Amino acid sequence: MTYGPDVAIALGQPFDFEQGWELSFGFRVARKLSVKESSARLLQETQELVARLVRENSALRGQNKKLAAELERISKGWDEVKRLARAAPRPRRRR
Image: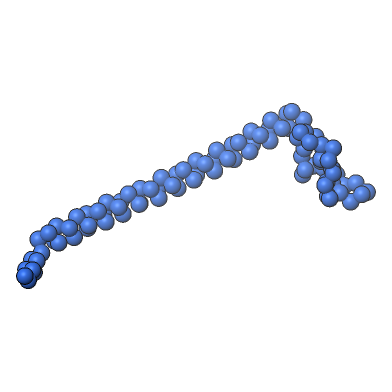
């Protein structure tokens, strides 16, 4: 066990800090999670993270489509500017 200013922790052991109990010393000691609880918590956290990634992926795909449309619009405008620049009369150089 290592001791911090507020909590005693056994290294390498899974603990549930939310379900601990108060001791008369004023710091909280966490109880060890069972395998079933650890698996359930891991499954829940994994599902939440996957759902978050799916939402973020969807948002980024939408943003990517908007950016691609904007790039296409700007590219067409730039092509028009280059065409007009080539067709513009140039002043003659003085020698």
